[in-house]
Image 1 (cartoon, rainbow, N blue to C red):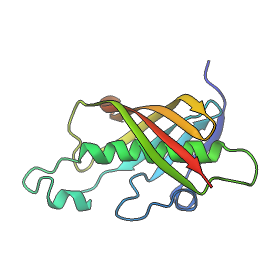
Image 2: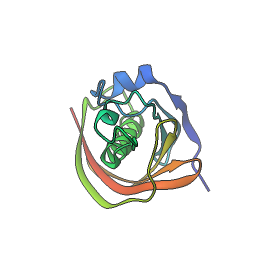
Image 3: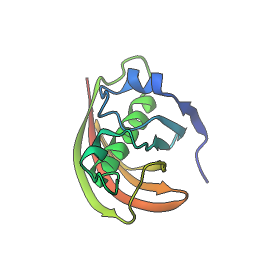
Image 4: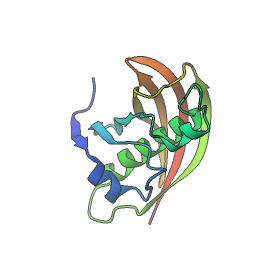
Amino acid sequence: MESPIKFEEVDIATILKTLPHRYPFLLIDRVINIRADHSGIGVKNVTINEPAFQGHFPERPVYPGVLMIEGMAQTAGVIGITSVEGTEKPRAVYFLTIDKCKFRKPVMPGDIVEYHMRSIGRRKTMWWFHGDAKVNGATVAEADVGAMLTD
């Protein structure tokens, strides 16, 4: 049975207050359905205006897989930080590990990527999440990511 939803939606204004990332490296637009069991879904609207498409690839633009992994990590960061109780929120999230990474299908301009993240472990300030990146319900990438929350 799933845990109850803690935050229905974390919008871009809240993400900007939560993460230090900014354009062109803020790679999520919102996070929805954050649950008390430390899971949630990050949403990225991929447009042809993404800076990466200037070189990846001009004739057939494909959203880079490494940016999807970073989007997973940013989603996990929002979930982790918003899950911390009290007023002393962590000020930074450092990406530590990527494991079991697989790219399954290309992501193109116009796609909406959903980063389905769930916590798979936690020790003190370190968190590990499993992520499935999906477009129209089909998995396009997956990975386990680890991060550390700091003051």
